[in-house]
Amino acid sequence: MKAKVYFTDLHVKKGENLQQKLARLIRTAGIDRIDFDKKFTAIKVHFGEPGNLAYLRPNYAKTVVDLVKERGGKPFLTDCNTLYVGGRKNALDHLDSAYLNGFSPFSTGCHVLIADGLKGTDEALVPVKGGEHVKEAKIGRAIMDADIVISLNHFKGHELTGFGGALKNIGMGCGSRAGKMEMHSAGKPLVIPEKCIGCSVCAENCAHDAITVEGKAAIDHQVCAGCGRCLGVCAVDAIVAADDESNDVLCKKMVEYAWAVLHGRPHFHISLVIDVSPYCDCYGRNDIPIVPDVGMFASFDPVALDQACADAVNKQPVVAGSLLAKRDRAHGDHFTDLNPETNWRVAIAHAVKMGLGHKEYELITV
Picture 1 (tube, helix red, strand yellow):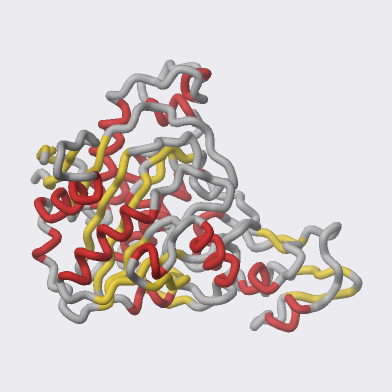
Picture 2: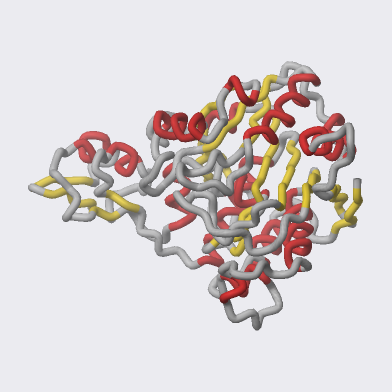
């Protein structure tokens, strides 16, 4: 069985701009079949790390918001806090970063909610039926409280998963801080002694009494539950995730988190293959695109959507002077050539196994 993936290029004619063309694409793809009336609709998007200019413009988000509101829905833009240090580690900084990059209620027509709360600890525990690595996913609570999920994805390269598309935006992006730590790490959080100031806030917030402070904090990994709360409360970023999981296992965990988010409720997915940067929008910088802009894709099937976008990128010529142009392109695959230690096909195969969608697709041009 082939899933339907809808595509349109970035050419416009008089009387229709790109936002209007995006609206026509997602309507043709069938988004109107979803009953939005009075339904809370989470539009999962990456707001971009301050200093990065490759993230999607908020104008595209407004197009999706307007369509949901037109159908009677109650949309909100959302993301979860990051595991690493940066401009989106807590909800206040995250909102500042979103507003700085243009994602405000005034520009997009809806509110912005950071789904896992102030310090990344407001999570829902979601059982993962058939999970190979994850038995209970830790998902930002506001996302699990929503009735409908729409992912608006910037399709790009990624240093751990090969590329970032629908599965990554939903799976990794919707994990709380503890969820992200579970996906990235095989172990428990660590203390960087040189940074620790011995304030004891981590110990006071540890629900399992796993942290002692004698000048510097120390974590007993035999007692630690890996909840990640200590990462959120440390004011000097002295506690970090182990970040020691293999890329293949990380990809599978990410897919199992995506299953937890999407299972049992309506969902729809949009990917814009533009400004295809070599690395994630989580960096406070970006490089020139690795291929020319391709277009906009939409589907009810996140797996087929990711596969179609990957195929489309791999058909493109390499941009001269890009990081990809400087790589040894012996693999016959742009993403593997860019990051040879990654294998994006692991996520696709595992998503098919988990019942998230189909690898085979019919591409319909709009």
